[in-house]
Length: 254
Image 1 (cartoon, rainbow, N blue to C red):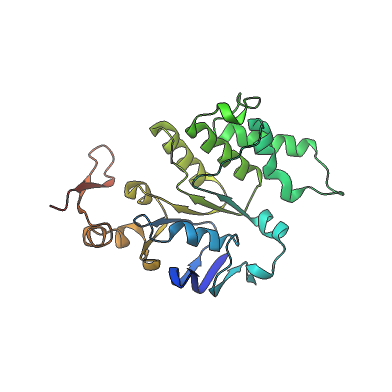
Image 2: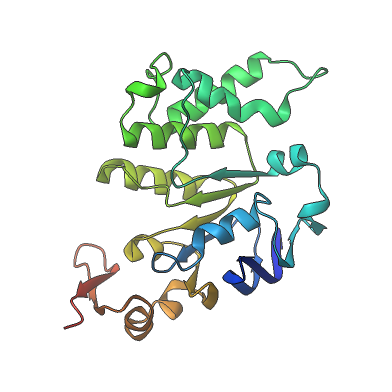
C-alpha cells in the first residue's frame, strides 16, 4: 500500500469534520471520492497530502508516518490540486507551471534542460501549449484549472490528489483531463461530484458526515439504494446503447 490511514480524524472547535477513516490505497490505482457537499472529501485529501495535521489517527506514506517526513520529500511524492487554487501574483502561465519543479531544485540541483522538457510536457498534456506567456489574471476559470494541473504534473509525483479537477472545465476538457489522469503511471485520489465520472475509477469511496461509509469497486458501491441514502435523490441506472456503459440518471426525491 502506497498510502494508508488509521482511525484518521480532524476536528475544529470540537466538531468532527473527518472521523474514523481507515483507508489503504494501492499503488497505481485511481480512487474516486464522492459524497455531498460538506461530507469531508476536501479535508480528507488535505490530510492524505500532509497539508493538514490530523487531530486523531495517522497517515502512512510508503510505510512512513507522513508527519515525520520532510516537506520537500513529501512534495516529491505527492502533488495536490486544490479545488480553488488562486494567486494574486502577477505571473505568467509558464511561471506557475515551473513552480511544480520546486521540490526537485536546490543548490546542487539548479534548473536544467530536463526541467524545461518536463514543463513543456506538462503544458502539452493539459492542452496549455501556447499559453506560456499569458498573464494569470487574463485566464478563464477553466484555463486556470488546467494550468494548475500542469503545475502538479510538472512535480512528476508518484501520487496525485485532485480535488474536483473538472471544476470550471468544458465537457471536452473534462473528458481529456480524466483520460490523462487515468493514463499516467501514478496513484490518483480524485474527489468528484459527477457520479458517472466516478464509475470509471478503479475503486470508489463514499463519504457522508465525515465518515467513509463505503469503499469498493464502482459497480458494488454505487448502487441506486446507496445513492438515494447518501445524496437524497432518486436514481436509476441506464445502459448506453453505444458501448454498454452503465450510467446514472437522477430524479427529484418528490
